[in-house]
Length: 408
Image (cartoon, rainbow, N blue to C red):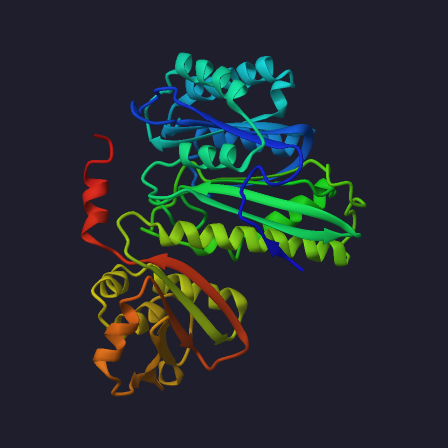
């Protein structure tokens, strides 16, 4: 059984976090963060599928795939260190070397992550100075973790954190996480950085499998604007300090661990979608009774990535034709004369389409339902037994404003 607690990345035993103002791009706020474990961690990672991968992505892939442990992650906001060539990759190494020196850990146990403007080189002198500030500032309190979550924000409007407790072999374990992301968000995955920590003891191969399996239905099912980032990174760190029997096979303990991971990743995914740049609501699409799981995912994604549908949601307009159209161009074969569509929110539920045509629904009630902060479209394909949910947001004037002068 999972128990959600009001905490974040520092909730598990042995994890610390902190922030610093290094002046990388922003001059009036903190812009660097650290996540640190008192013990070396087994680690897993998931990264952008964009062919253009930022230097920190390449660095972290090397760390989680080729190195024994991960013990610290240094994050900066403001400059993405993407499309920066060998110089940018060298700055990853210099950052890791600086962290290794002040933390007294191996450089190949240090991950790095960056978010912000593409194409600019990092001011490495400020980064290195920031690493020293982080080492001095880190702590294990919730406030330390919260400040770290705020420091990694770019166009985000709020910090994104989660933590749960769960039982493994009679031992209480904890998992916490933080992430950032509001724009350039699209499978697979999005301009997002996510750091998940746990004090559970688990085999590295199973940790990797759990992450890879879960990202498919969480971070890979969110979209804000249809652009896949160069910097997407999810790092999962497990330091075994809870003292539970090591999870080394796919048994009930592994299932419980996966449930905790799914809860954390799904919660953070929805936080990102609901904080999309300029958005006014979280817009979900759940496809039910599709013929295959993959087709359900494809159909749901097609709806929440439709610019016309997103604009209609912003206008509280039940323009169901746009949803049916998005289903139709998804590439999935289905019978449009079997499709039912519903809208639901805190204001109620309303069927607007039955067998591919309008139900003659109340426009006033539909507008009320679509005026809430969390709106769901349910598409019943009547074509099988599989389902999937994708997470997005509405498309507003503010989105264009934010992205028209992002580099300024």
